[in-house]
Length: 293
Image (cartoon, rainbow, N blue to C red; front, side, top):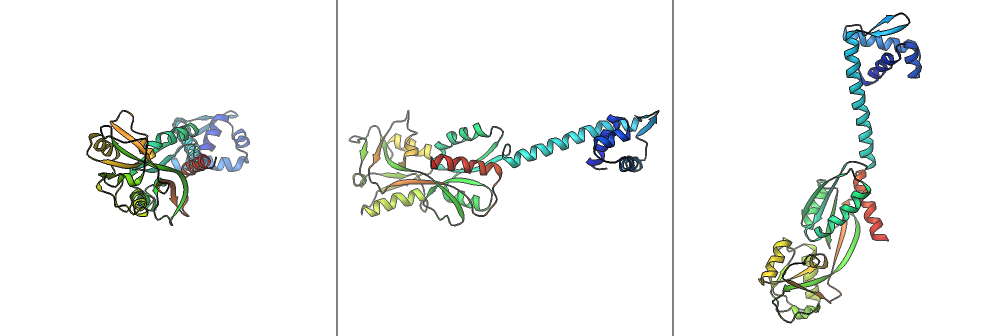
C-alpha cells in the first residue's frame, strides 16, 4: 500500500459510498473500487462490507482507518515542514565567526531571529583562516572573517572597516585618548591574532610602512585572556575597535591609533558557485541590506 491508497481508503470510510468518495477525490468510480479491492487482496482481509446502500467498516477496516489517519497526517506535516525549511522559515543557520568579531554576533542574530523565529543555529568560533577551510569543506555555509585573506574561492560581502586601538593597563601613565604608531615603538605589544592571519598582517604592514620595528612579546587569539593580560600589566595590545568596545569594568584604558593605514576590515563569505540553503540566503540578504543602506 502507498499513501495515495490510504487517502482513498479514508475518503471511502468517511463518505460511506464509493460514488461519493470518488466524487470527493475527483476520480471515476471504477478505478476507486479497483483500488479498494487491491488493498483487500494485499492485506488478505475484507475492509468494508455493504449494509444497504452504504458501506460499513470491518474490524480490520477500523484498525486500518486509524493508522491511515495517523500516517496521512504525518505525511502532510512532513510536506509542510519541508516546504517551510525550503523557504527558510525553519531550518538551521550554520555559521562561523572569527575570534575578533564575536562581540557583533548577538546583535546580528537578534535581528535575524526577529525575521525568522523558528530557525535554529549552529555557531563555530575560530580563526579566520580556519573558517575559510570549514566553508570550503562545507562544514559551514557562511562565515564572518577578518581581511585580508585569499578569497578567490568565495563570494564576499565586505562589512565594516574599523580603526585599531592601543590597550594598556589603567596604571600605565601618560596614555591619552589618541596615540600614534611611532609612540608604540618600545611598548611590549601583544597581538590578538597569529602569524599569517589578516589582523596580524595588517598590524605588521602598518609598522613596516612607517619603518618601525615593533616590540612584539606575545600573540594571543583568546580575547578574554588577552584582556586579562593587559589588565594585569603583563603587556599592552593593539586590537580592532570591536574588541576595544568590550572593556567595561576592566582595568584597561583604550587609545585610538591615529594612523589611517591601520584599519580592520571584515567580510561575510560563502563558497562560490555552491547552493546555499534558504536560511543562509536569508542571512546573506539581511547582511546586504545592512551594509548597503
